[in-house]
Amino acid sequence: MELIQQDPDITAYLAASESVDHDHPLVRSVAARISGDHPDAYGYAEAAFTFVRDTIPHSADSGDLRVTWRASDVLEQRTGICYAKSIAYAALLRARGIPAALCYQRLVEDDGSAPAVHGLVAVLLPGEDAWARQDARGNKPGVDARFSLGEERLAWTVRPELGEVDYPELHPEPHPAVLDVLKAAEDRPHLWRTLPTKL
Image (cartoon, rainbow, N blue to C red; front, side, top):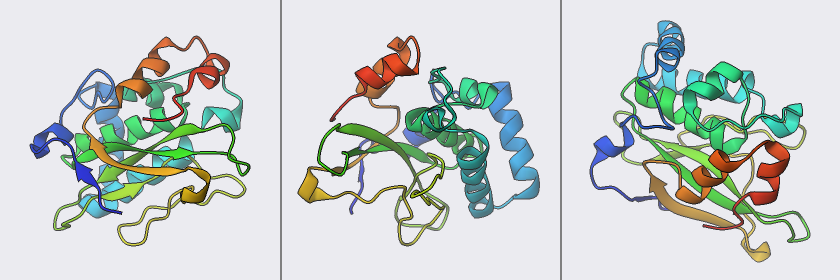
């Protein structure tokens, strides 16, 4: 799938913001700890992916009712849904000068019901000429997402026949439809009722 860089200025994918707050001391501290063992960009990007995927449980898997939307909060509270974990991973990448974008899929249940937007991160590593999507959602039975610059190893492959969609746009910031529901959610059950069904 061809990904579309929405902002022609690559620095937009390195910027700090309210949600992707890679200038926060906690984000910087975690990034420094990871980069201590993985100083090169590729090794760091993979290690940061594994850190977010494996050490921050997806709140639906863990039963955590808290909703996070700021990278520093995700890292501090160690919880979040796919959107929040993507924001945290993007912040860790940007903290080390690696361009990172937020991107999305539209997924449904096997019977075509319950559409929901799923969050991913696209990374552009030095020497690479293409963005590579990563899914730090967190693995569970039936889900085996892995870091990869070649063939994608996402949690789910879209099924167009069921109306699923890979959105090609690369966003410097979380899509407003995503960020708005995260900010407005009182808890995860509330968030589950208000998840965007499409972009």
